[in-house]
Length: 281
Image (tube, rainbow, N blue to C red; front, side, top):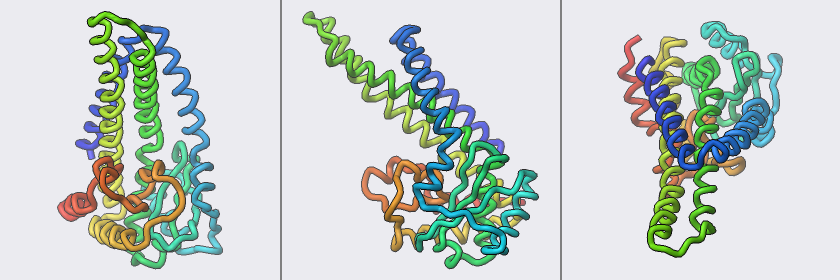
């Protein structure tokens, strides 16, 4: 777990360094404008995205009397993680999956699909729930928001660079060369920032796998669940929602083709299973 925590810190440091370097090209004023705009957008996202995501996926809150076993599992795992019990939601789809959301452990929710309830055994479902509750305990929503904020500022500055390169004018060769470099920079830097952001997402998935497995002392349960979910999603991908929210789920719930696989928010399931099976508790 320490390895993944250090990797996250290093990647966030790399994103910050990239931001400071790009910001230095625009001076204090340009960087300040970008920071204010993106911070405002991500402040709203941090505090209200859980409600938006639950609404997007038509999730309905389920009470204890409706799903007593599910509630008892979540309550037991949350108690073991030493966090408050999250609210419980159900998504009416045959696609098996689950996600956690909420800005901190006191304002968290765990959503599961109808499909996952029918697909997994009790032990496998516990593995999935422990993974999601680990995301809450590890404050991964906060970390994802920080990464998105830094990457968002970089992207905004890159957009400013593109406008400067296209509309900056100038007729001499040196000026044209500088504008060409600025245009190239404005295209490459956001791609680098996105790759780093995705690496952070994958590191947090590995961490949630490990900490979830340790919570229930059963890494093989989650390993089996991941294999079942991936196989089922290939036949029953989610047909509503947004690919932008794929990182929330325990595995990508959408059909993925071509370039989408190169920019995955999740590690390969085979790698996750290998790590879980090798985990010594």
